[in-house]
Image (tube, rainbow over all chains, first blue to last red):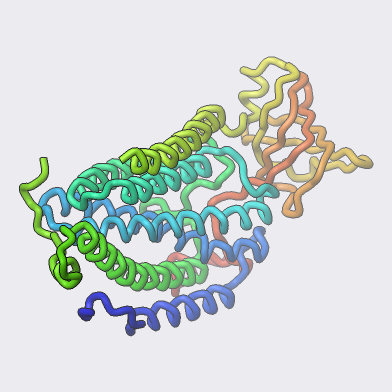
Length: 246
Length: 139
């Protein structure tokens, strides 16, 4: 096994764990939020998780463009890996939001524009992941999922601005240009946990790309012509097929 | 090959089905609630259920057995609400609420109430901050 495919915990992983524990500890010690009770501390998990979802889908978008431009499969690996992390964190953001919603709004789920659009975003990216599981040829798969990875990001605009464009139960955006509706101590704790969760994203992305590469190598090995010697099938991953496909 | 198509179509149909359900719900709820101004000027009294949102007017809340009387305002107009149902924990005067029920032309009869909190996250010490470190003014 090469260095890139070895599954060992690195400094980044430990940094992620320490950062999240420190940030959440700091957030719990931050002053109470006026008129919303302790349930509002969900803020320090809810905002960072949806931020990670946005970030992950944006990375998928950039990696998808990079793949279409360069035709290098490693960009496809980044796109797929990041989208999967985005799906996980969208789910966590929705579940965390439901807990907070029950405590504050008195309802777990309702069909307001923000909640519904977020659910749509989740299912579109679940569809993206399903698409990646279906196409066998790595080049075809990379091209088709890149198209979806690029179009998919457009959803972020209505998801983010839904609370401004339409009348929703969800409160409007706290972060407006040059006008942040949040007091300093709460803002500091929130930025801390956003930063900590971003480290978690980096650590997860590194591992997920490694797995994506292993999967790719395994599939290439399985697809290689079966020769009399098993060694042939594993040492000849058919990576470079540029020009061979329409 | 057939096997591969099934692997695609089954998840594709499930995802598309879910998306259609979500989109139908979205279009029905783009306007999640109506305001007192709209209620008084645009909406005919009927048995149709709708949601009304606004702030609870200070001093307007009256408890009468199981019934809660309150006035909800959007800053321009206000509506009397007769609420028969659960009252959420965070309910208070001055709080944003969304009630669901029917409009009879003079009062809104609701059986379900949600709290709508605003986008402001303030500390309880009543100090306004302009950045992490500096207190701007005591209010």
